[in-house]
Amino acid sequence: MDKYIEKAERTHNLTEAELIFLLQNQSCEEELAAAADRVRAKYVGNGVHLRGLIEFSNICRQDCLYCGLRRDNKKIERYRLQENEILELARKAVGYGYKTVVLQSGEDSHFSVEVMTRLLHKIKLLGLAITLSIGERSFAEYKAFKAAGADRYLLRIETTNKNLYTQMDPGMSFENRKTCLWNLRKLGYEVGTGCLIGLPGQTIQSLAQDILFFKELDTDMVGIGPLIPNGDTPLATAAKGDFGLTRRMVALIRLLLPEANIPATTAMETLEPNARIIILQSGANVVMPNVTEGDYRRKYALYPGKICVADTPAQCRCCMSGKINSIGRYVAKTKGFRRHLPAAYSQAAKC
Ligand code: 5AD
Ligand code: FES
Image 1 (cartoon, helix red, strand yellow):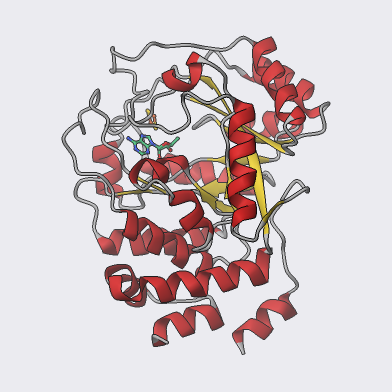
Image 2 (tube, helix red, strand yellow):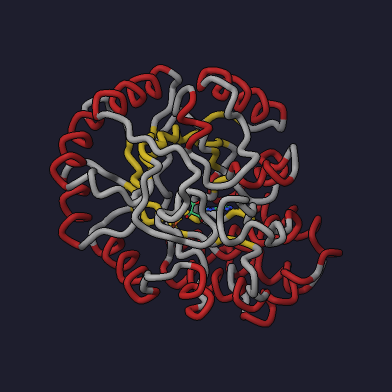
């Protein structure tokens, strides 16, 4: 076995140079994925957690160059679900057997602390774990959401390269994004972050540094995905992110953060038809099927070619559990919080 893969599996640590070597090395990919799959089985088991995704508004005050929801995109049809519609989708998520809902939107200021906390209280009564993914807010707002029942928060750093971040996310502050993540951590959320793969000008070194950042933050969830160029954005003519590189990233993230929850994301399946299954066998243990209904699924257009837009949430549920069972895994019945394994366990893994 490659000595760096063996080291990663045994110690869950690699240097930046070792990460770069493995990210660049296509010939090690199968071996790397197999090691990540073993670590996944050992630390988080064979259960796959399904998180029901509710895309409740595509209105966004930010202007990220890659994203179809960016405020300067005049071509997208904007929508915002009513509170009762969101609650109804959460009820349906319970009906599909999901234990978690992910409430995701653009940065839409309509969803004030008052609106969000009212909604969170109602959803909490359904017995669901709640993940929020609504962008940058103040410490006080994050605190209020937590008190109202939010358990987890997803906020991708997108890239840890400050120059690239500033170029790709004009008007946003890299420092503030990091502050948001540390604030979420301080408030006791399960924190999820991640990056895009294939941003123009992004280097392999920068991706290696992204992984080291996830480790430094000791992030509970890591969601990454390839860039899918959107024709209605300034990155219309950029190249797509590479699937193999995305897979190697997932595998390395599992090896370095063995307890993390790692989703096989839908953007991956836009590149490669069987991507979510391949990624579930390369270190991932979470899938986020869409619970959003009808035309809203299509309108939440971060990138083109989004899968399942014509399917109903019930079809997605059925399709995913079939796929998961076909690879000898099962749909987990628990809420799937991050497991913190006793130090002795991780110590044993280090010997
Ligand atoms: N391709 C792939 N992922 C994208 N996102 C936004 N635009 C794109 C795109 N064109 C991702 C960002 C954001 C998440 C919600 O969607 O990483 O954090
Ligand atoms: Fe920033 Fe959509 S506008 S990710």
